[in-house]
Amino acid sequence: MLVSLGCVSAVAAGILALHVLQRLWFPYFWGDVGFMLRVLSYGSKLQVFKWTSRVRSVLDRFVQQAQLQPDKPFVIYDGTVHTYRDIDRRSNRLANVFLRDVGLRKGDCVALLMNNEPDFVSVWFGLTKVGCSVAFLNTNIKSRSLLHCVESCGARTLIVGSDLMECLDGILSPLLEDNIQVWTMKTWCEHTQVNSLLDKVDTASDGPVPAELRRTTSLKSATLYIFTSGTTGLPKAAVITHMQSLKAAAGFWAFGASKDEVIYISLPLYHSAASLIGIGGTIELGATCVLKKKFSASQFWNDCRKHEVTIFQYIGELCRYLCNQPKTDLDKVHAVRMAVGNGLRPDVWREFQSRFGNVKMCEVYGSTEGNLCIMNHVGKIGAVGRSNFLYKLVFKYDLVKYDMVKDEPVKDQYGFCQRVKTGETGLLLSKVSSITPFFGYAGSKQLTEKKVLRNVFVKGDAYVNTGDLMAEDHQGFISFRDRVGDTFRWKGENVATTEVSETLGLMDFIQEVNVYGVEVPGNEGRAGMAALILRPDQTFEGRKLFELVERDLPPYARPLFVRLQEVMEMTSTLKQQKFQLVQSGFNPSTISDLLYVLDGQQRSYVPLTDPIYRSIIDGQRKL
Image (tube, rainbow, N blue to C red; front, side, top):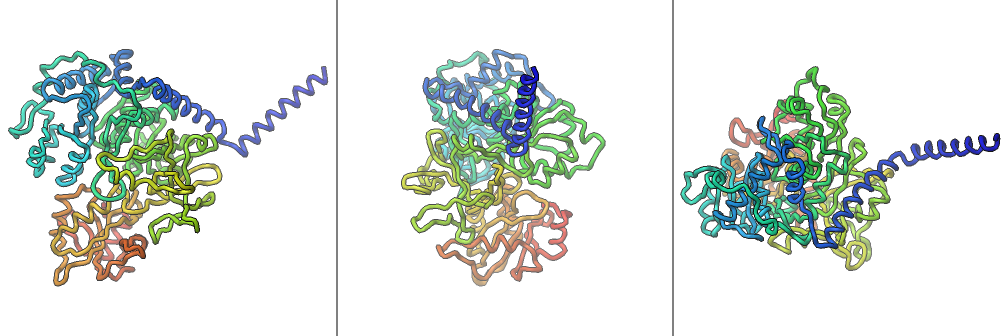
């Protein structure tokens, strides 16, 4: 008896010791195992779709939810509740109009230019129900860029929201000349060459169109095109396949969300975060979303309390805006338990949780067109994602040494990239494989190929160049360090420096342009700055430049600072030198060149003086 008790005691002590050691040496072990089991179980579903050639798309899941819970609120917008049945029937009406009046057929591509509203979802689903792929257009882009986007994805039809008709100014004639039909979400339109949709929707049947139209047998077939700045030039149409949309729709579920969630979506639906993760994730769960036309920091918490929101989506800027709101006694009075997004600075992260309570912040890293997704399921402050040996068995990525001055990866004597050591910063590369394919961009194999690095470690391998510098610590947490090349982020948007340079180059007094991003204390990302060389015998005209960028560039892409130079520095490979310019910033007391700052009130670029500089640094002058 005593021996038995002794054995039991020894086993118990051993188990306790192992538990203590596991908590000390492998504190995230069980969390990692649970998370990976969810990821792998969902991945197995996709493999079944692949093997059987019977794909259950995000739309199929929506139709299923509309049948299972037709009266459950799906979208709450501006105080109005739209159930799963409501959106299903509305999208059926639109689908019937698309077939009968618009003349769409399975396989067509349709461009969609709409702000956040329930009809964005209804139009999107209506188009998908008739077998069309949909290109989401950024509502901030204008003129040449907008025309380029419509043409580059191969769309022959453009649907415009009722409040965005002014976006057609200057491009309607070129669109019509290219035989692109234009429709608007109105009952009638003052433009005789623009067709109205709503009057036809009102008389259309809400019965379903044949399911065969939307059916697909391949996970690799394109269902959406979402535009990204990429690394250079005009916006590129990233191909979004059923595989990518299904993976994104599982995001909330992977973080442990359930059908009882109320999800707050204030990010623009033309972005993959709001549409694929937000709307798609709501559908996968069978949950409810509160959709906002635009984010409002002053309304946010009142909305969350009113609708009993449990999850919200964010970009780093959004959380900073919330922290900048006046404090109230109700700051911690809400039901929000989780937030999913990206770009959250550690200092804002800490301040947010300290002020608004223990909301679990779930960072997700992954570009729209990329083949890698990293998720911080632990909620560790400052990490964009977490990796472990299980993750690395399935998803192959590497961090390689990068020369910031030469703006290229460091190669060894054999011409191969070199991996960084644990804790060191390196360029994140993601291997192209059958599990993590890269679908690239629509319309140009050259654009897709420029995103891929070949012969990275061995002859014949291929990796997607993310353009992001990362570091991975000894515990497997991955942190964002910087963006390389010709793209930076500002106000939650990618800014392609080539596009901005080309726009500024239209000015008659400018000879050469070098656009880059500079850090501004207290702000996420980098603010746009342009180093200019003026033409001989020309002077800088701040007012003319302001008028140009206001007309041709979206707000986030307009350079906030201008630096006049005599000579433009180049790299050894004859590329414009950006590194030193980025490092020097925009401080007039340390830079001898003339500096200017964009002034919205004076509608001009005005001299950047020391007092103005200090007001920017102190946060008194809003950018």
